Length: 135
Image 1 (cartoon, rainbow, N blue to C red):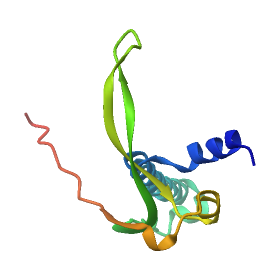
Image 2 (tube, rainbow, N blue to C red):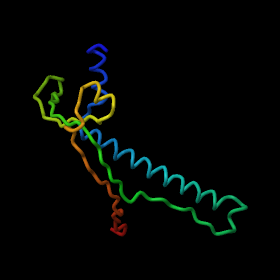
Image 3 (tube, rainbow, N blue to C red):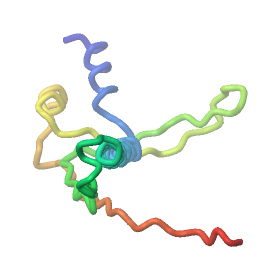
């Protein structure tokens, strides 16, 4: 494979850690929204279908209380350009990059799994805060 091809694969695999965690959080939120939407649609159906209306049925609600995440990754420090409003390079800031350890990354980079980092994170739902609507 050409070095140009290697670079393209590396750009897909290696991302700032904040991007990876942000995507995971968004995916979990989308899953919860899909569960909520299904329950809402079910409740609407139970209340509007003539055959079902008389039974007093309630939709079941599902909730993701917490998600434990454990990722085995190759971590590296890099630099990202900071640009001004005229798109001139203003400086550089350090960025922690991460790449998931999968077969492609290991073979492409001759990476030893023993040198990997394990990232553990827990995403926990919290109850909503309630606003006083009386002012």
